[in-house]
Amino acid sequence: MTYFRGVWCIMEKLEPAKDRLLKSKKNWLDGEIRGRILVILCAVIMISATISITIFLGSKGLQSFIKNGVSLIEFITSTHWNPTNLAKPEYGALPFIFGSFAVTLLSALVAAPLGIGGAIFMTEIAPSWGRKILQPVIELLVGIPSVVYGFIGLTILVPFIREHVGGLGFSLLSGTIVLSIMILPTVTTIATDAMSSLPKNLREGSYALGATRWQTIRKVLIPAALPTLLTAIVLGMARAFGEALAVQMVIGNVRDLPTSLLDASATLTTIITLNMGHTTYGSVENNTLWSMGLILLIMSFAFILLIRYLSSRRKM
Amino acid sequence: MNSKTADRIATGVFITIAIIIISILVGLFYYILVNGLKHISLEFLTTPSSNVRAGGGIRDQLFNSFYILFITMLIALPLGIGGGIYMAEYAKPGKITDMVRSCIEVLASLPSIVIGMFGLLMFVNLTGWGYTILGGALALTVFNLPVIVRVSEDAIRAVPRELKEGSLALGITKWHTIKTVLLPSAFPSILTGAILAAGRVFGEAAALLFTAGLSTPRLDYANWNPFSPQSPLNIFRPAETLAVHIWSVNTQGLIPDVEEVSNGSAAVLVLSVLVFNLLARWIGSMIHKKATASK
Image (cartoon, rainbow over all chains, first blue to last red; front, side):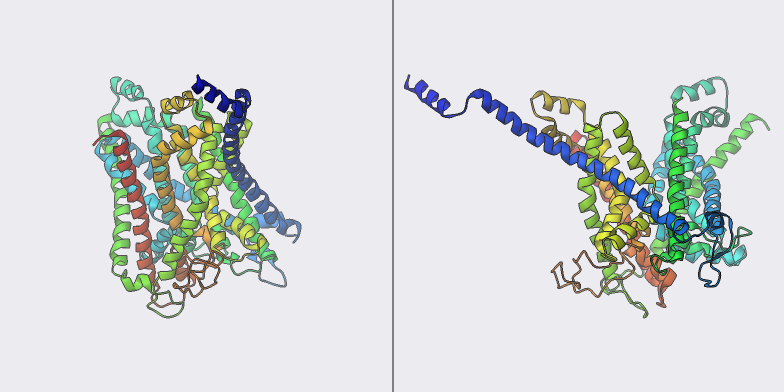
């Protein structure tokens, strides 16, 4: 009896159960809300980073046209780049834009057959041991930093081309070769995923009709995986378009439009890399470099849109 | 040509392609390691670099690389894991989630030089810091964040549903479930992904050129005061990393032993990235074995 009275006394001192439960629930919710705010904050930071990159680079990149009066048409179409000529400075970035597109397309032309071929080797020709060898090879290729590619290009590829092919060695060709090796892992990885995710009955149906392996690959598997294979190539191109240091080390960086594969050339990224450090911040030349950066940004949006378009085709 | 012959030729072509890819890698590694390893010595790793004379080492560059990596991870991991939790657990399908996803996609596809330019604008000029370790680390965070978010989202989504539902059924709230059930079981995959991302950050140079700079002040390794300009721990000093060093000695260096220094640095860089990859793989498989009790 006294025991019960004791308990009752303790209960008396405490708040009523209703309040207690409500209060404790509120405490639980506090942690809950804090957690939710925390993760939403992380998402907000990501969104604001993206938006501020677009806005900052966009406004800075447009300054040369708006504030400095550089003509947009001249910037895109003229081949004369001569910003240091005080009497008549010229800001034609076409050679660099052309250089960027040229190395990107050429390296995609080299890397696409190699990458897709490698993927087909891994999934169709030798699915067991081929994959065991090639997969780590590809992963290791991804791991090599871009400056190391550039350095090896500079010390092996450039002298080799100078002696055996012709020209200075610093050329579109060197840039293309270095870039194709760099984007090869990207293309191969995604192409491998594409090929191995194809349903098995496609292959079996084709073999059952008496098709050879090559016929199956060419007439059934490649058409079925085509949108993803194209995505793989576009992703590789996006990487090639934005690559800076490795290309800069081997391409020669001249301001003229190249006339052959063996001519030295320059790309948007290499000109930015070279000149950003030693032009005065805010000068017209510096601002045109930001405009080139803006072109890089716009192209990277364009690549995303292209990939989206390709993946929407895949779903159908 | 009948179809059998065509088949044989095609098979031959595919095998040739595989051999080409493998020989590219073998050639690259052979060149890097054979030429680089003979320049790596304790002296090379522990003497400061020289701007004009031969015989410089990479002590400061090596330290800077690891230090910037450390600071980057310190910022990027909480943010990225938070973002991953949001995407996996809180985001409802709809416009906002689509937008976050697009933002991640945009960030992931930005060329590193563009991120470097953004860093120059934001963390160098706008803040008035000049070239700093912190600026470099923040630029690398932007570069690294999408990877970490994707890795942690995938890891959290891969946790078996029963674990989460069991916890919720015990009356544990969502955030508490995330903290005590989902994160611990997603931890191995997040760790593996983070180490792989670290390898990528370690070799990155383009984003650092205009944010962390091309020079390192004279460092005094006995000075542990993080606010002193000579201290290696000061995050408001310029810092040239190993990858940037390879680029700068090759394109604008004056030292006579460019080839030796860059061979050695390239080997150190590639070996470090290799160690990161092996570490990630080893930790991943070890934890997998422990978790699944398989051999």
